[in-house]
Image (cartoon, rainbow, N blue to C red; front, side):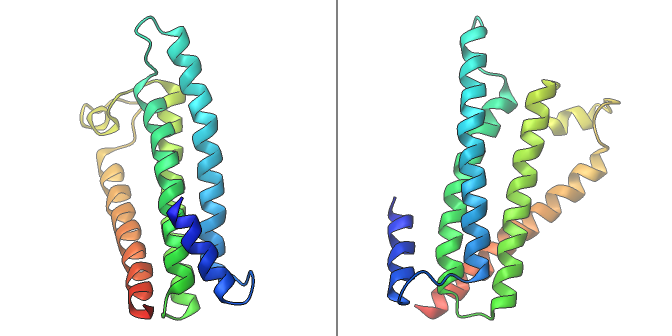
Length: 164
């Protein structure tokens, strides 16, 4: 992909493979998310074969697609982290915030796909299903997820922008 090509050029322009810790975290996260996407894809395919409608359950499909999406997003963030003009400590915190919440989101989709308990985790909480976490906890998690994903991405992207 273009992102990988850009990262390769960035790495090689530095005289070899010398990646920042933030870029390494993003690349490792990308690898984990990509493999998760492949494995959930096999799970999705198996469900499609067994279901009379030819479809996988909602959260299995979401887990598969989001894993692949987050794998690509992590590659882009690796490039931004590598290029960033900001201090290494700031870039590393921003990268880890993103990777952590990408992983937590995928994990929640895999959990709901395994349980096959809902097609909407928020509706389940609103209906006060005893199996669902309380709505306030989901809202708190979503606020933290948005702050970390948007904030962390903004830090890495603005750091790269500044360096360009």
